[in-house]
Picture (cartoon, one colour):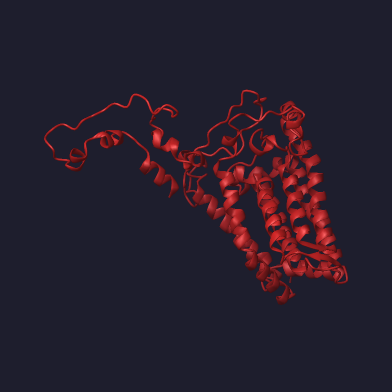
Length: 400
C-alpha cells in the first residue's frame, strides 16, 4: 500500500503539466485552447531534478528512503563488504506460492517472491505448532518434562541445561555448515538448522517467562514506571542490534540461497557483532526489572553464548571471505564505537541513509508489536505451564 501511495503521488509524465495548467483549463478537459505546457528545467535549489524514478515529490517524502535505500558516502570504506539493509521496493516481486512444474527458481521466475516467503514461513510455523508447541500432538512438553525430571524439578538447573544444549545445537550446526552444505545444499541445511534451533528457542523463552521470579528475588521493579520506561527504552534499542537477520529475510526462510554475508555498513560500523551487543542490552534491561537468581543465570547464559558467537562468527567469516574479512575487521570492533573512537572507522556525513531503511523500520514495528503482545506472551506461557505434561505426540506410531 505504501508503494502504491508513493507511486500515485510521484510526479510522472504529464503530472507536472497538469499542475501548471490554469485551474479553469485543468478542470475543463474539453477546452479548445491548447493547455499551457511548461517545461520543468530544474527543481528548487536544494532538491534534485525530477526523474523518471519518482520526481521531486518522491524525494520529499520520507517514505522514499524506506521504499528505495539510498547509499551513503562510502569513499572512506574498504569497499570489500556489502552494504547492509539495502532495500528497493521496485525490485521486489510477489512471485508464486509454489513453483509450477518445470519452472526455474530465480528472480524473474517468481520463485523468490514474497508469496513464496510467506508460504515457507507459514509451513515452518505450522509444523512447529503441531510437532512441538501443541501438547497433545507435539513433543515440546515431553522435552521440558524430561529436563525437569532429570533436574529434580529445579528450574535453575533446567535453564542451565537449556543454556548448554541450545548453544551446542545453534552454534554447532552453524559451524558444520561449510561441510554439511556439500551434501545437503545451502537451503536444505538452513531448513535443518531452523528445525533444530526454533523448537529449543521457543521452549527456553516460554520457560524463562514462566519461571522468571524463581530462586531468590532481590528486587522487582516491574511496577515502577520510571524503571519500566528506562528498561523498555533500552530493550527497544537492543532489537536494532539483535536482529540483523532482517537484512536477508528470504535467505532466513531458505527462499533464496543462504549466504554468509560480510556486512560493512549500517549498524556494523558501530559494532561488528550487533547481536552480542543487543543481547547484553536486552539482558541488562530485563535483569534491571526482575532481580532474581533465575533471571540472572538465564541472562548470563544468553550473554555467554553470544560472546562465544563473536569468536565463532569471526572464524566463520574469515573461512568464507579471507582477506576481505580482515580488512573489515580492521575497521570495526566488537565493543560498540571503539573503532570510531580509535579512528579506525569514520561515519559518513550522510550516515543516516544507512539507517533509514526498510529493514530497520521492520525491526521498529516488530519491537513495538512485541511490546504490546507481552500480556499475551505471559498468558500463553502460563497456559503452557498450567497444561502440564501430555505424554506422546502425533508421531508415536512411528516408534510403536
